[in-house]
Length: 504
Image (cartoon, rainbow, N blue to C red; front, side):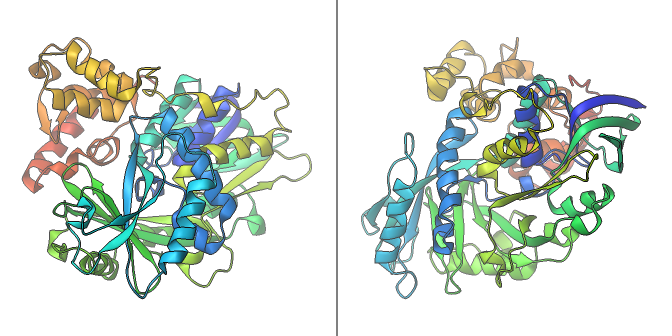
């Protein structure tokens, strides 16, 4: 099947691929993106769910990366306030670890490396009086508080893909690329889509395949110029909400590493992450018992009612495809990104995207298009800094006022249902509610807040094809179900998405 000719082809539907696709489509390029699995099906749905500057990167001297990340924190919360929300982080002072003076200096830099508009400044706190001290063991009496932001990583990727598609990009999921070959000044690319093999031509190719970046580069004939990656597994566990732990906590450990304990999905605490080197991508997506025990032990040093291994209700791991910089410890490898442009004389360009973090995806996309600008002399100027993402257009009234108005307009639907939809879809919650006047009008209740109408929307408008896509990536409804409920939900959701008609 002939798929046409494009300016830009992208391999990889994670945060970087989706971000580049949206930016490029908005700047006038014809774009096609191939993802071999689901959007955010790899590393981009296995993060710590944070938009943050990276406080610990200051210790490694990554001043530029931290400053860029802090700037982006402000940009992104303005673009998608329904998905990205400020969160207070508490650092209990642990005697014998980082000195208080060192922490003060680090937080001062964190406050002042970039202008803050929506994020409060850091402060010292008395844990014997501050409510944040209640879940902590009595030995932790002082500490610090600062702010970063929490994000639903997989929803952010799906929203970026929507942005790209609505600007003209063609998004193919479950479409592994099987052939990449130069032909004159274009790339010939074959992918196995759900409708059958598709062949496209592209003037430039972006390899944003994350942990599989080297594999895709070799498929494109890069040979010895394929990028060298440092693959590092990060494991997270989810437990029932630690009693009275309503803030996020940054927990220092005797080995020098830090672990986050984050409020998650109303009823849970997310604890992570680890840094374990792996040899292959396949190793990077399976948590080990040793890593889970490490995270449980970290929580146990600080919290009165600390979780035990049997409390784990969800576990996930992702492999970070980092730039190989020769660092001895996995935790010391830079989280910065690198863009390698490979182009033989007379051949089309291949841009390999290596590393990066969720917070800096927008800047990475701009940098990628800057590297490719000689190929596209008519490229429109950058635009993403000020444009809301789909669902993020709340105008001057803001997200909170929108939520109040949404509840007012739909008195027959439970406020909790409406607020949940707003938190996932922003102003596009109305597309799901549509003409519904009561909760019953939204169809069968599947569980975890999910209804039949929402599932049909995800199948039609967001490339959801399996129960896992819906229950664990587009939403986290699966986390709110027990094993029996989850099994029933999987059957129903799979049936519903199997009947959908795609918008794109």
